[in-house]
Length: 385
Image (cartoon, rainbow, N blue to C red; front, side):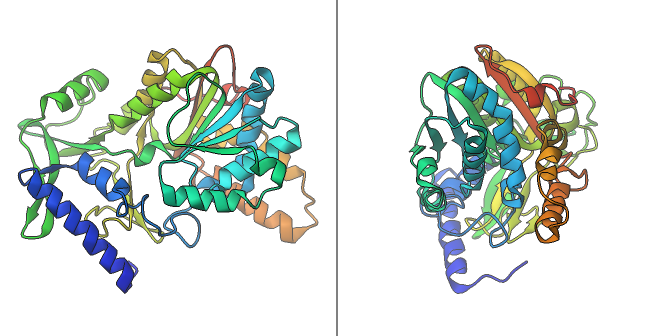
């Protein structure tokens, strides 16, 4: 792992002190969901609330929009029909660096399908500033359509896009052992963070497991099995579906359907940390400086959206979605003889669609209200939920 500089080390120490105080205030034990919430979102200290660069080669990880503008162009292609049909706007959740917004706006402009407004829902002041700086580089007629929001709008008409949003919502860690289910949290040994398992689940966690994940553990041997539940995922999906009056919402993230997520062989869950392009499994290492993620249970996403009155359009891999959206046509629009331009694009496309890269692990799921649709998603080869 990279060595921390003095400023980074000081930030980690401040974040650790905040977490230690929270644990002591809560009687010596803190749920991991609360721990994850604080290290990611605590004002001034959390990973997404502090000033370090997160996206791209100089950050901690690379997302699909950072890899290639082909990704955003395909998303734009997939939602253009809805925008033209409804006369609606675009709402992007968690816009990251602003790269996806820039690519979508550019592609929609080329297609003659520009929305009146491109809303960006961003709760991080630091990220909002970075997005504004990046999008200000667009032509004026595109940038003037950008408007930042701090909460979901009401009666929204148009297309909602969310790329890698659900995987950073706090998760509850649940351990299944010989004595049944218990919740894993964080305690202190001196000033050091240590795992501490409660022998039972609280009533609200038990109710969530029973209601949202019935029979999940039916085939899991009663030995040592650790997994995650993310109650904020269905809550967010429901809230977005509720605010959508007419249009579509497209969620892109890494994860599985429930039967794969809670497979008996997945005994250590999916929790992962990212720092300067190093992936590891220790959430205690650099609190406040590293990202913490968990894969998405897409069965839970579908149940939440459908329960809120949305219709499932489709569920497929990122590779299938991009191919159905015409990514190869976009590539064919470039002259292969221009090697300096064409070869990087082919490499970028390979990263987006290859099963060994992002093509299979990343999924795309879409929903509609009011008769809208996403043809590229509906026509792609579907996966079971």
